[in-house]
Image (tube, rainbow over all chains, first blue to last red; front, side, top):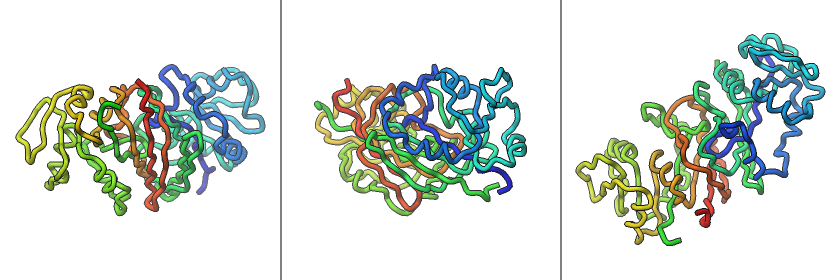
Length: 174
Length: 174
């Protein structure tokens, strides 16, 4: 594979939402406690690629949680960087061609994840399913990702009711 | 609980679809083999409530798979019954008032499941997640189901990569 590994690590409601319509993620509170393997996953990536909505949400939290990582924000509206993050407007393939020295990329944010899936460059996907039906919100899989066979690596059920599904996407698929 | 228990047992793609846009379920072939507990579940219900699309799909298969069960098809376009199924046009609460002698109802079909969820009368939900992203199709959770906290009962991962999530919906919720 002549490009960095691209990974997704994300939580959704049981009906597939990553946030309420207004962006709220208060419903994640019901599974607070364990880190669900996030710290280990985060330690394994050297680069983050995220969408503008994810970036703006993260800035709203105050802290800069990405110290020591290269951060690329995909946006058509670049702004002043807080640290050393860069702003880019590129397709997944263009971006990956510029990131050949990266080893593992954390692809984050609904729109960016969908773009990378549609470009056939997601290699693994960890879905954390929160035990709640929201009935409305912003979807992870909003449609248009294309068809992708998944290979189940492992599952883990936590006492909070969160279930984690770890999938690989076959490397030879296109 | 002064009404029959209402249960859902359904398979979706990892991105939440129950069929392709044209109704096709060919993608279920990739997990064929085990019955995933369906026979045991089916034996536990005495009554089925399904939507017209589910009924028409089932008729297309030729066989009548519901012998010995009471079958109610929710539709505004009643047709000639093949066996002793009945056609009804009623809200979930109206229907349940007519089915007080039922013990456990198998609620099937996307639209009917959503109506029963929105009416707060689903008691348990078994989701079988097939390891494929379809990118498009007919959703199980199309929106409008309302918010429902779930309690995770158990999970099971099968060698085919299918993961089954069994949830209860709290009885005292409304």
